[in-house]
Image (cartoon, rainbow, N blue to C red; front, side, top):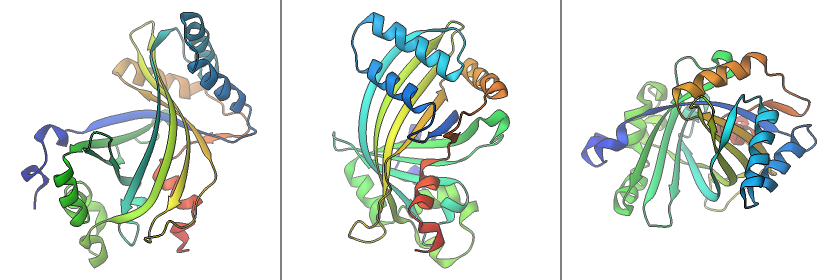
Amino acid sequence: MKPARFLPPASDEPADEHEIKLRIEPRSQLAPVVERIEALAAEDGNAAHDTLAAEIGDAFGLDDIAGIKGIGHVERFMVYHDTRALDLYRCDASLRTRRRRNGKCRVNAKRSGKGDGSHGVAVRREWRYTLAPDVYDFLERARFRPLALHHFADLLGRRGDARLGLSPVVQIQKCSTRIELCGAGGERFLLSLDRFRGFDCRTPEIGGTTGELREVELEALNGKATRELASICDHMSLPPGVEQGRPKYQLLVEELGIESGS
């Protein structure tokens, strides 16, 4: 069965994400800066936004930030699906689902892109599907097998359990402050300050949970910003309590001890 038979054609066009992810520990040197940025983002007025732009530029080494294009705050519950053998986790891939308030559903399929890790910038290929409830329900009943085989067939191997489809593994609750930045040279970035926790959802009753985790994600929204990210990484040194971030699904599987068979 091919997804093209029941998915909008435009949904199958992939996009490459170029981003820097930093995991922030509560007592790190960057934690107070992140908290100030979150506080400033909650304020109204041009003066606050000018201060915010300067604070972000100083904290993350962005040159010539011209201003803030937009600020948003979102809270979401999402579910990551995988095989019983965690094939997607082991290959740095993921399939994430979210039910939206308008009744439609969002499915994101991601896998590592070429050039992963170049200059410290993670590159991932992403497919985004916005589905009507009946289509989503069909895929859910099929355990997302059509999408899994379409996007991840080469990663799943020949084990029988991998071919049967995907089941819920981790639920994530995420609160994000999202700030779109404009550079003087036309660069466009999206800075996300994420607070999140994960829940083991392999059984009908939610199992273990993580504590609150914090991450900064700086994503390039155009080619000029991609080149700027590489330049930042060339001279970036991580302060104590800050480490290179990882894809959230991989991080949460490990935080919950799922990969160890617990």
